[in-house]
Amino acid sequence: MSDNYPKTSAIEKNCHDSECTEKIAGLTSEQKDLFKKFTYCPYCSEELILICQNCREQLDSPDYRFCPWCGARFVEDDEEK
Image 1 (cartoon, rainbow, N blue to C red):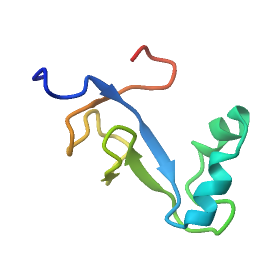
Image 2 (tube, rainbow, N blue to C red; image 1 turned 120 degrees about the horizontal axis):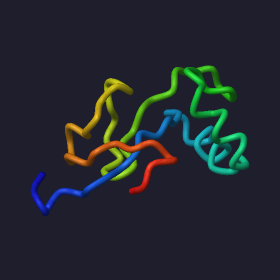
Image 3 (cartoon, rainbow, N blue to C red; image 1 turned 30 degrees about the vertical axis):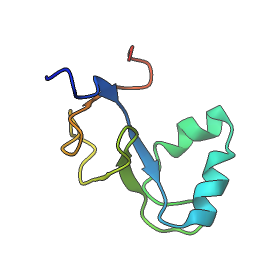
């Protein structure tokens, strides 16, 4: 990987609705851990989208190992960044 690319990032789940995004940001760490397992938003029932935490671009698959937009390697929360 080239030096100008970020080394690591993570995949984040989010909702399209800005009101839901604000509610999600206010969750406790335990609630956020549970939220990562959801497929649908618990506030509006829309399907959650996957986003690269580094470049904030939407992803098509949770199985990606690298972001196709910025090149960052995806790591789990418990992995060292």
